Length: 404
Ligand code: ZN
Ligand code: ZN
Image (cartoon, rainbow, N blue to C red; front, side, top):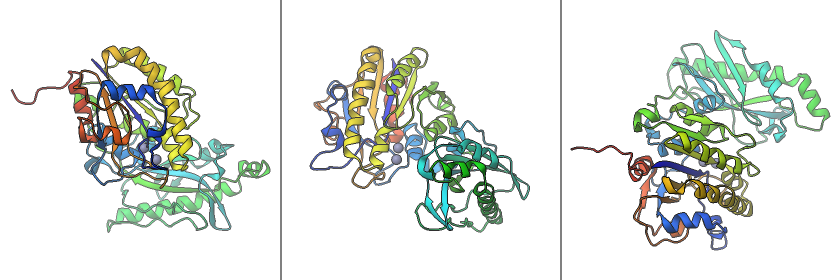
């Protein structure tokens, strides 16, 4: 048996007018996985802990995020196709808009015009014998790598994550002098980036076009190369990831999975998820484990848009789950779940456990529908995300015997 894990990012929710988006959605294919499979609920990281998408995925692949996670920056770097050396510090950045010394927009109006060129201007700068690698990812996002020992990731963010306030000064978060040095370099970079960007032709052009200028870099989530044994060395199975989200691609690259990027897949609610379904079916031909990640559900949740989330779930059901079931159900263990809840009412991740359903050689339970409260009555009961891969590979008869 092959194995397929489908993660709909942030799909879990709380009640709005008595129902969650999953419960309100028409999703016959997801329901059929629950009906024919075994169901339960899952705490991805641990009970009561609100997971980020990165720590959630680490945990889902069997890595203890409390031991392995050093920050989001390194995964963004991997996701952008960059490699990290021991001692490098990677930070995740936004190209943002500064007006009269205050942050006016953390995403420079989300308009992408000229951002690639602006990012190139910042790449290759040197500050105090530290080389700056700066690369734009999708949209207004970018990643910054500081190269030049001794550096430390124990520094605070320059992104205050709110508007109408100046960018924050990075400060060391421990007593290590390397942390002070690293924070100083990041502050110098912030100042330099501002000088370079403010007067840049691209920004003059952006203003002419009616866009906000991208004239400041805001940084957060500093981290170093995480120490992660590969997925293959852990399970004896080479995995492949189908995702359009750089953070998730980064986590998968960090553990040595193959990556399939699909044209037209955007990571937004308008993504061409049909193509991702096709890529998944194709990938199952020559891989024993495929991980399919769909982001749109989380995006709708952060926008607080119940209807958009419900519609996204219905589209995933129609365009992904249906076709995938048709093609691979016979010889594949299929697990359907989320990486965490993102309730539309609070617009951020929560620790509410998420529903999970697994189809394959399982002890089918009495649950008939896929949803938070339905799956809570299932026979998987309440599991921790750290054991999910073991459970999936056991059902697929790919698990090793412990003992004799
Ligand atoms: Zn997530
Ligand atoms: Zn999210």
